[in-house]
Image (cartoon, rainbow, N blue to C red; front, side, top):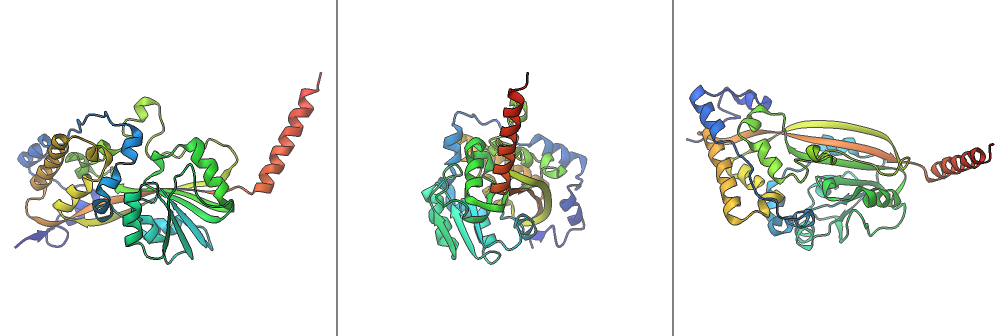
Length: 317
């Protein structure tokens, strides 16, 4: 009879907190099987950004959707029109349905849009990007980006989001993935497996913004900036964990040999750690960032006062 570690094994609580201990021999084996993420990075950022369409159906099935409490935290009061920017297959779009009157999903990849449209009734699906949103000025109460901000150019996307938002509208960004602080995910190399696919995994060492950073190039366009984090548990099988890892960009764009090798290492590590489990409680985390669009009239007035002050200063002897 197969077992579920969340239901039948007394160590289930430790799986959530990442404190599961193994006998020394098995721990040694697990460490030796740690994923080493040694895939070549010959593929451009743009190619990786558009790679997900090749596995669109798997992406929609395997990736975690955002938890309700994270979505509720991002939404402003009385949000009528929400835009899911870089919507992918609609994981956030579907979470917004029922919470707002109108959901508009903007996605540049036709393969992802096809899955999004088929699986997201009630969502308006349009072709577009974060840098060119096909919506009128001041037409949205909220613009949200789920696990896609790192693919966008902030210099162009931030002003464009500001254009589309109404005064006081909400700009929100979230990333939903494995809880990288979990010790057992780190031990098995599954947090490292995230870094294989994470286009900003080495950003800190290269002086670039990190994966979960939101950089606003234009001062004064947004205010009331806040961050929050929401932990939750996703019940998964070994097969579904490996399938999820296969939907990250560096795995998708790797050679067939490298892709098979990395996924095989992940499967072996999981089987060593959880040899009898039918299901595993995988700790997940949604990291959230939000800000409000500044009032256009107030912002223009501040700019005018600043210009007058600069002019007055320039004529002083």
